[in-house]
Image (cartoon, rainbow over all chains, first blue to last red; front, side):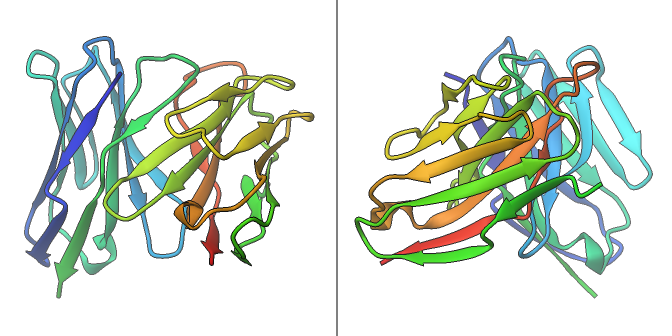
Length: 112
Length: 115
């Protein structure tokens, strides 16, 4: 079945630096790749997503890139702020019942 | 518009006890999901439903049962709780019948401790 690997598991950056989180997926039929942010004690919240017909998508300080050939996608956060500190999850879907397969998560810490 | 709500927020069970977790959504979504979240393992799908009266198994269904008698509610049951079921449980929903099916909206979670 589908498998999603996410790296790194923890990431610490200084405020203002950039952060990059990478994911690889195994199912070549996957066509939807969302990223979720989970703050302490809360449920995951969608922050950005990308479909397989697009190579890159940006939303203010957040961007996602997709390389279908290599089957990997990445989240880029620029000008990081302390409020970006959270756990980030990538996921992949091949549109079967809307199911998502999640990566293991990355705990991002932004130090002031 | 409350989105996705879950009850209870926290529960302690003894091994062998049973309980039901309730998920409710007010977005008229067709699809609903139950996940468990354990440290270092991300979110793993337990069961899901693609419509009222339907359920299907996810990655880790053993020890759990579900029911979707009403479109807005999705119940997760533990018939005989085990310590291995200590986890944080999240419910999610998606798809109002048009647009992307995969964009899921999550509830706040239920923390379950089985002693």
